[in-house]
Length: 307
Image 1 (cartoon, helix red, strand yellow):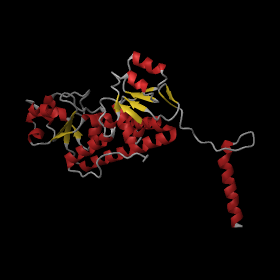
Image 2 (cartoon, rainbow, N blue to C red):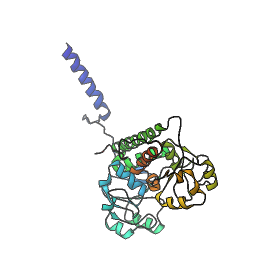
Image 3 (tube, rainbow, N blue to C red):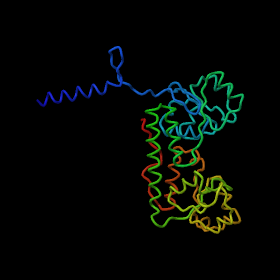
Image 4 (tube, helix red, strand yellow):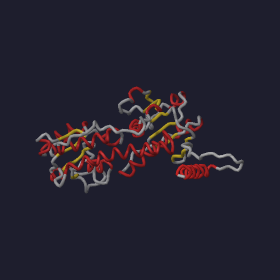
């Protein structure tokens, strides 16, 4: 009796599974969602791209973070993520090596910003899809960005899942890093250049908050805060891009800050933050460690769902 009951349940399950795929000719098929085509903006990508050229350093970093870098055949002159040095360089969005790009017949070109009209038309004539990928402005934008790049590289199902999983793991580790602050956060400022600081409304400002510090430029806007105001706040620690360190140390105002005198000026690559790939998580963990002596459990590299 039990065997008959189990057999009936199994038959019912199979019928329900096959029902959405019923056809009028009496045959049955199971409906499986198609990963392609996908549409990004007004650009349709008809199939999974196997020959991608990225002129967007942000896109390149994220593609490596997602584990889809085997699909890349070329990158911009400004890409520095580990592994990109092995790929052919094709200029930049502002100054692409158009003829060389066309000659290698890519499935897809990724850019940042906008191409010149002549370049755009050249790719259009050759039926080469071009998709613009720009950096995120905030936490939610970062999640959307990873999912979009994932979909482009691996389709609506697997690609979206990989993008979401990768960025969620990264966000979890970033936001856990700041928990070391407890109820006594250090005060800090982040110089992206000598004249640009991570103000509260910026992506870099949010990244700084992930490290668990209190941003002395949190109420400032547009990457601007007067040196005199920074000196008045006298932050416990100063983070800065390596190219800005010497200027900060030698400045008549900033050079007198206790953080500079007491060797609490810590170099953090602005590019790691702005390009939003592997280096983003590493930057947050490094800032948290500098502020609170926090030990990190990894080198900061993200793990994609695709091995």
